[in-house]
Amino acid sequence: MAQSKSTDRAARDARERLRLYKARQTVHEHGRKRRSRDNLIAIIGVLAVIALVTGAQLFYFNGGPGTATPVPTSTPTDTATAAPEGQNVGDVPDPAVAEGRTWTGNLTLNDVQLGISLDGALAPQAVASLVTDAAAGYYVGKTCHRLVSSPTAGLLQCGSADGTGATDSTYSFGPLENTAPGGIYPAGSIAMARAGDNAYSNGRQFFIVYADATLPDDSVGGYTIVGSVTSGLDQFMASIADAGVVDGAADGAPVVPTSITGFTIQ
Image (cartoon, rainbow, N blue to C red; front, side, top):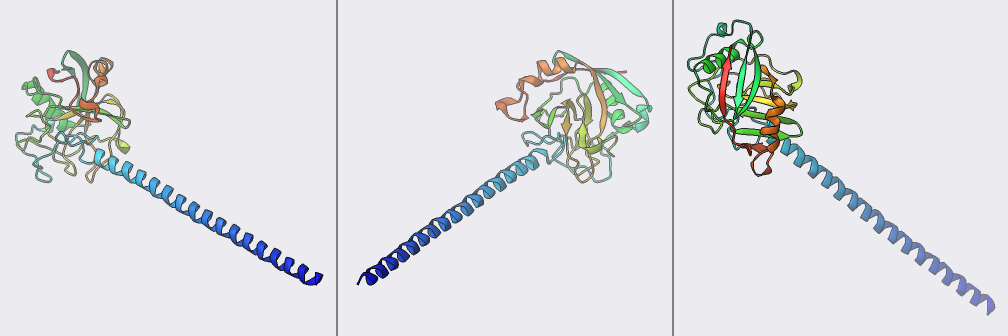
């Protein structure tokens, strides 16, 4: 009889040990599944963030310098009617006008005077265009419709015929000249705005880089660097750039309305 009780107790202990083992296995399995689910959620979250960042960068950079406001790209681009591929449009001056030399002068934005230098040797076609238009008085009174202020670019775009950034379909030229290696445009660079994926869509719009900018090349390359700011950039930043973009955006109309009040080249 004692042996039977001992056997029963051993059986009960065995069953209890089995129950506890199964309970531990169940807890372990639930924990494993929960960890797998949490890891999957974390991975999805990371992928979502990457997708958002990538999408934002593509949205921010595609289009190139000159894009009509309010398209938020960090590369200033001329949009609207694209120039015929490989052809100049309108009364584009001969590159020989640039004389293959350095041109100096002053560009005044509101009451801020910037000393500038244009390189007629490295960008003869673009310099010929700017010199001709400046001499004709085209730029005085034109607005700077677009300010970009982001961790990867700081620039102001000016010279649109209608003040909106739209392309002037009656005037455009190419090819690209003196583009930035690696898409890196140092602070002080002056470059020509153009439509995306068209090397012959340079016009009268240009942009001033006030903080180092990384502007990705498109299918035809980068943007023609026509010259540089040699003085006054700090004053420009304090008076115009530091005020930022309307509504706190990264790309749009500057808080300080800005126009070209003087443009002399010699």
